[in-house]
Structure formats: C-alpha cells, structure tokens
Image 1 (cartoon, rainbow, N blue to C red):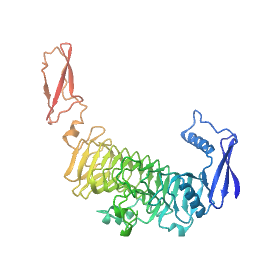
Image 2: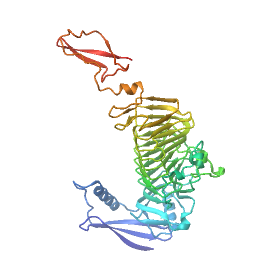
Image 3: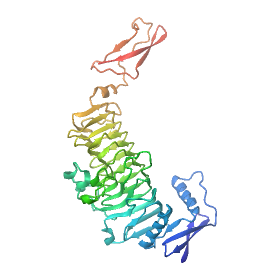
Length: 485
C-alpha cells in the first residue's frame, strides 16, 4: 500500500482541498478520501461561462468521495482491474483531471460510468499505434447501462494532407455497400459501444482515427423503441476517417472495410440520437445508416462528407445542423429503405449541398443554402421544397441542380425575394408587392362585391393575406381573396 497527496487549487486566495489517493497495487485503483480544507469558490456576477465552468468543476471535485480513481502511472493491467472492479457493481471510475494516459493494449468497460475529467487516452508507441480493433471496448454483452464522459481518445493517425480529401473516397465501392468497400477505412477504432441496455457518450473528443472514433452496435432489442438507446451529446473531434458510425447492415458491424463474413451480424443501433456535437477535417463525420436515428443541432466544418446515410437510414431525421465548407457533399444518401428527412439545416459554401443516388428517396426541405449543388440523380426521388437561398443566389447558377424527374421542386427562393426555382409556389412567395390597391373613396370608383378575383399579368397572383380590408363610404369591409392563375 502506498499513498500520496494531490493538491487542487480552489481559488486565488489559496483555499484548497486535498485528495488523498490510497493506492492498492493488487486491485489497481485508488480510493479517494476528500478533506475540504477551505471553502469552495462561489460563482459570481460577471463570471464568464468559462470561469463559471471551472468553478463548478472545482465544486464537483470537492464532493468526490469513495470513487475509484485510475492514475496515469498505472499499468494497463491495473487500469483494467480498476475498470473490472467498477463494472462488477455498475460503479464509477474517474481519471485524473487533464492527465495523459498511455496505453499499449485494449481496455474493456462493460457496466457503469467512466468520467475522464478531461483526461486523454493515447497509444504508448508506434507498435501500439498499429493495434487493430478497439482502444476502448464495451463488448457484445454489457452488464448494464454505460456512460462515458469527458474523455479524449487519440488514435494517432494523421495523414499529411488530412482526412478531408478525395484521396480517401473510394467512389467505386459506394453503391450499394456504402463505405464498406473503401480500402482506406481501417480496423482502428476509439470506442466500440454496445447500446442495448442504454448508453451515453458525453463531452468526449475523438482525433486521429483511421477507422472511427465511435462505433455503436446493438446486439439485442434493436427495434425496441420504448427504452433508452444511444445518446451522443456535446462531443467534438477532428481529423478522423469517420467520427461516429451507426452501422445499418451486417457487413458494416465490424466497423472496417472488407471485414470477414464470419464477423457479420445485424447489430444495428436504431433509435440513436446525435446532438450538440462539433466536428472538423474528417473524411466523414457521421455515418448514420441505422434506422430511426435523429441527427440534430450539430456543426461540421471542412469535412469531405459531414453526414452519410445508407441502408436502413431511410427513417432518419436530420434537422437543425450547420454543414459548412464540405468538399464532398454536406449530406450524402446512397439509397435504402424509407424516406430520410433533411429539414431546417444550414449549408454554407459546400461543394455539393446534398447528393442522392441509387434510387434513394430523400426529402430536402426548409434548409438555408448558400452556393453548392443539389445532385439528386440515378432514379432518386423525393421533395426539394421551401428552401431558402442566400441573398442574391440564383437557382441554377449559384445553386446548380441535377435532379431526377422523380423530385418535386417547389417554393425555393432567395431570402431577399429576388430569385426562385421558377415554380408557381416560389413565384407566389416573391410577393410583398401590391398587385391591387383599391383607393380610399366613397365607392364611386370601386364598387364592393361579395367576392372578387385579383389577376397578375404573368398569370401568377399573390398577396400577403387571404383577406383584404377596404374602406367603402367610411365603413371598413373585409373581402376574401380568391387567388388563381
């Protein structure tokens, strides 16, 4: 047995707590005993969000008592022993705040909570860097709900030109098997998490993975929709081949290209939620091939494909995301079952805003798009409706289109009302201009009737309201508008 003290400064007047770790070499974990030797700092008016966050985390640290702490100088075996002890009871394991942990083998965590407190896991050396499969693995039969939070996962593989490159896009294998045939997609993953008993990944960081940062599977109850599945919340990452992967077919479940058929299993993590995340410089940030997933409120910058959907992804909802400067396509749907809905997202300076092919059906509505293209081809179908173009963007010029005849195109218009897709609905939305203005007169030049029709010279009529109020002999009278070509 051995012990040492770790001092945490609580504020600038040197009030602090002492966390005493009593380390057991046989078990490989440290029991924390908290001795509060001074008042924790209070949040004050005028604190910035960062100052408030630091103080809140300091307060939380003062409350840790009896938790399992894994220290940076532990061997791989000691770390695994600590995990196993906590997993047996669904307990909590914490890493030292902000520390680096060097690993030379894989770790397994099957039940309970891991709180990294800002610590980063990375491989020890070049030999460890070549390890395949998963740095952190839940396995295929978890003992209970899993929560992993505040941990960084560094895969250590950074191509000179970065992962956002056409070099790593194997278009020859895109159809029908998605990225399963992309030979650049390797067998190296940060986390494999099994979600059938519930799983949360929160505030984690993924970088340098030539497979994916996070691979989710569900070995049982894939279509049970009244229980908690996977939630990925407030995570971030940079420079990965794939950031988050939700497989939708048995050949995708192993999480890398060309996997042996003996590993295939239909373990799709349906009903997953990915929200509040920020990604950059990936080949693809999110591959959501499982059914009934929700991808909302995320931001992806300078990726080749921020979002890819294939296979069972037809029931996914993609809403309220920012897809910026994608060099491949903001959203790529390669065909499958159902109708994914891409609603109310923002696409800024993407080479292609959305692409669909292989008979895919895609609804692309109410998005805000600036430049780029809509390449919805090869017998794909769906709706491209009510999208807003950036100021001055011209449909067919700034927003180029290559659309199969199966798409309904209507109501797309620049936000300043200057340019439209040419459909009747979008022309009507250009309104905000008077087509007919009866004068305020005693009725001698305008005789009210029970109803009337307004016509526009180009055959398209419009109004800001379905009703019109006029003044006839000092009496306001409201008429119903009948709009027709």
